[in-house]
Length: 88
Image (cartoon, rainbow, N blue to C red; front, side):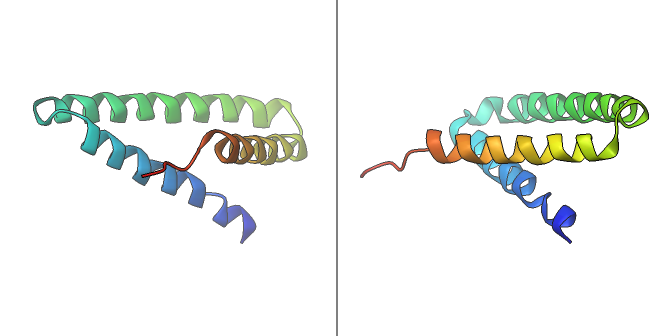
């Protein structure tokens, strides 16, 4: 169950990112911006899948899961530290 819930931050990130892109991009460039973002996401997913397949074959699973948990904790701490509420 906990591993299933680990996808929630990514879903929230995707919603926030695409909302920001749609509200800040000029209407005439919205398709290009979305296309570039989607292409970058596809490259990232593909690269991550290949690297993960290599890592699973050569590293212990516990180390990989600990690394994933550490990345989530660092990302959460950075988000709390860097994101400041706007006044006004």
